[in-house]
Every structure is written in C-alpha cells, then in structure tokens.
Amino acid sequence: MSNWPDLLLLGGVALCVISVIAAVIQLLQTQPPRGAAITLVIGIVLLFAGAYYSPEPFKPQSILSAWQRVSGGDGAAGTDTAPAEGTGTEEAEDGAEAPAN
Image 1 (tube, rainbow, N blue to C red):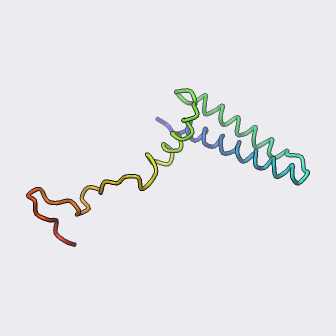
Image 2 (cartoon, helix red, strand yellow):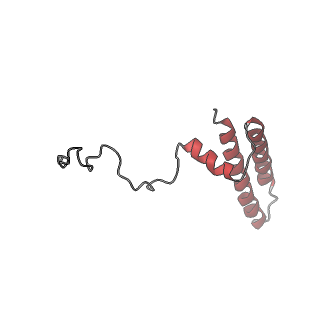
Image 3 (tube, rainbow, N blue to C red):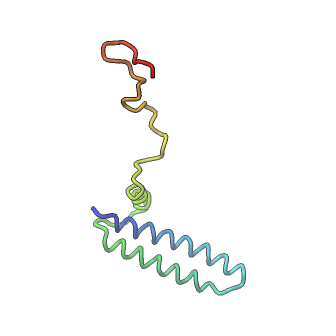
C-alpha cells in the first residue's frame, strides 16, 4: 500500500495547526491573517485529498497510525524490556554461561 494518503493526512494536519498559530500571531500584531488563511485552505485541501485516496475513512486514531506507518516505528522507543536476541546475555542451551566478549 502506498503512503500517499498518510503523507497527505499528516501534511494537512500540520498545515492546519501552523495556520492557527500564524493567525494568532498575525492578529496580535494587528495584521490581517491572509497568510494563515491561505495555509489553512491548503491544509484542508490536503486533508480532502488524503481522504479521497485513502481506502478507509479517517478517524481520530488515523493521525497517530499514519505517523507510525510513515516513520516506520511501531511504538515508543525504549518500551521493550526484553533483551534483544543474540546480545550474549542469554545462557547457552546446555546451561553453560555465554562467553565474555
């Protein structure tokens, strides 16, 4: 499956968040938020494009799962408490200790 719907979803969400921040900053500076409005429209277009190309509908969990698929991660780093296989910390099958490196 292609990552285009995930990239479009993440890009649209990022642009919408940036547009809200830019609008607040521009309004505090008593400037019209034209750039923020344009960024918001582009973000919404990307969200609609992602929804069009996605095989399943977007849900609130779609953002996190899209981030995990795009970044290649399947959870938070460092949450695995079991030692990795072949690290030399396991005992040999006959009960003898692993040789020290």
